[in-house]
Amino acid sequence: FDPYERSFRNVCTHVLVREQTEPALRAAVKAGRAYVSHDWMGDPSGFDFRVVGAGAVGTMGEERPWVPGQRLEVRSPLPATIRLIRDGQVEAVSQGEALDHPVTRAGVYRVELWLPIGGELRPWLYSNPLFLRSVG
Image (cartoon, rainbow, N blue to C red):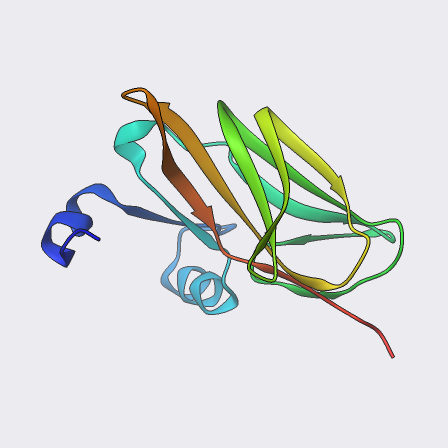
């Protein structure tokens, strides 16, 4: 790992807010609506990670009940290796700008995006998790 001094120069935290105010920013950070990326590798604007289904949409940081028929959707602004991780284990991998994955069980889901740099895959973006909990 890089020392903090170096990391602070090349890692960015992106917070999803509806308005640019201090209360909105604090609420979004507290709720986990954020991701980190190495912006020098590529502009992450347009990245999206959500759960859809059962008449609702959930995003990073949210806790939702798991119900059959839900799907996890990932959108990347650049072609990437997209890794969907459930409870710390790789659940699915996709190449390109999208991953759509049926949710077959409850769990803590997050996403990693990797880009080819210098002939090898390097981590570019890490999402915060979505929490899909069993009901009852």
